[in-house]
Image (cartoon, rainbow, N blue to C red; front, side):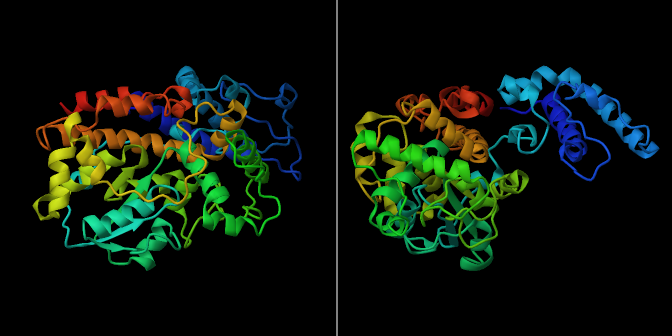
Length: 429
């Protein structure tokens, strides 16, 4: 969503409002009276609690008056707030960090960020943060075998670190930090199938007696996936049983915020610091998207400039535009790492609604991050296609059409990636 003045003011107001209201929304058994919950529309949750004890101090009364003033200011924005939340039943929930969608707490910038379109020197040191099941192995192989870059880490497999840990320890001193992100729904499914079918996944999950593995048929995957999700939804903030494999709760956001060496087992928190996540994301030098891996390659190769290997320059010239006669060249020059060939699906939107709801519950922060990454990515593509870049189409209509339905679940089911691209092109002009 493009930021507007009134929207920014609303977010600032709500952020201040949440800061002051949250203490009232907690339960204190030692308090002399029951604390009231404050609702979005400014009403008090329990009319009986309006008869506040006359023993309340004058300081507390002043705070309540201040709170009511904030509520009165918030009322004119009620409709916009509810629209942003996207769920009417949110009106009956207290304002609390657990219940507010992240886009109400942060002001979203539009790209392209200057460092995302700046030239990259192929002779410098590159650090690629490998988030599991986000095409990391493919990218590392491409960096090594095609681009011949000084890339850290060099191994396609092994321990996968958080951004913070890799910058401070594993790849300290790198000139650029790169990453690849993925649609949260597809990312969670990929984690599950990796745990169920890959050689590594079978080995680690056999240490758990209750990993859901009823069979290898199409229908079996749906049943097992739903059972696997149930395990994590019911766990809450616990990390005691992730089947020795992946814990899918906001996996990508935790990779952006955790100070730990890896995030496979869920450490790092399930309510990630979204301000830290966005700041980390903004400071990255290159962000690829799995759903647009070819287009991501085009941006990277263009930024490497004349010093890029001949293979990259040839790819940029022959494949980075929307002309069908060069599709075979694109396929022959694309590196792809596959860990297993089971559990593949043409789409995920046909999974049962109850199952998809569980995925959404586990990936609310990741969905917010990915929507913003998509917006910035399309801004970068619009710049690449402009006269300042290649001066030709790179994001093709057939690719947008392919992902339009699959990504429509984002932003409360209102997301349209094709419209997002066209809006970015218009803004670039």
